[in-house]
Image (cartoon, rainbow, N blue to C red):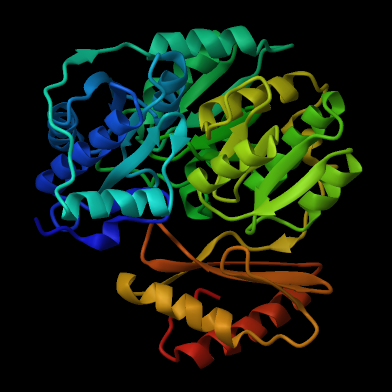
Length: 457
């Protein structure tokens, strides 16, 4: 069969429904994934989907493919991605596949895959492509059954996280799958919950389901101020990315969230390792070290971070995109709902409001993630070209993931997105003047590589 190779990303499958991602493609992927499960010595796989409009049809194709490989399917239905991960830890089999477009626009969908407790990435993702090309499938007829997981998850989290005092919160689920779980969980933790866009709607009619972009947090900021809430929490389309807004309406980006989590954990577990991705602030390493921890910078990508977490035995990891991974009292997968609950736990133990909680957390002049849109087929060669031509005098060049250039008083980053057709940039500096200077250096550098790039700064 013909299959679009571009949907096989660095750490998941992702494409536009009806073009790169079709029922036929998803069926073939189901057969390939099921075959890998069988060859891994397992027989069972958990399956879930988010609230996208293409979910019901594609999940049927996925289920049919899995069953045709001889795998038994436990279908947990429409859930946030963290519940799929949670289910793989609760079941005898530690394999799972989540049909989700995550934070991407409504026309996207994709797969996040775990086999034997390991999230597939890079070569393992490419192995699925090769298996389909070679028609290398196991044959059989598995059995399908439904499994309820939401109540189990809510009960588990509420047992784990008691709040020292009741809180008033606003929850923005962005019309994503988190709306099924997050408001109910937080109410059962004792919170007064004001819901914002918690109805599941795959059209995402109110705003794009991505809390890493400031424009998607404006209604949350407004309602937090209007209700005088203690804090606002925002989730992406499948609730594995967390956004935080304080009592006064300040956006707390995930690298600063990670500092709060790190300080709390290190107060109990000195010497522990904490991982953060290349997009995070330079203050993070200093805060972790000062609190007695070991900071580790790593690549962006949920499956790559999870692999590093397992390799290093770190207790916490986080990405600037909003993925937070707790191995302390939890299982080490990215779970924005659980991370939000842990933030509420810390806040409830403080006497002040959320602005007080973050006032001593260092900050710089910085940008959110900025995007340069390019053709999918050219972004890899362009990124390679940028790395090869990098020459920044005395600045430190880091190529763990893309190109991060550390100057004496700030830094700039450009890396390719593995989920959308764009390059992602971020900048940080000690002042607006220095930030502009670093951006000017990057502007000249980027336009020298490709003169027609449309830059967002």
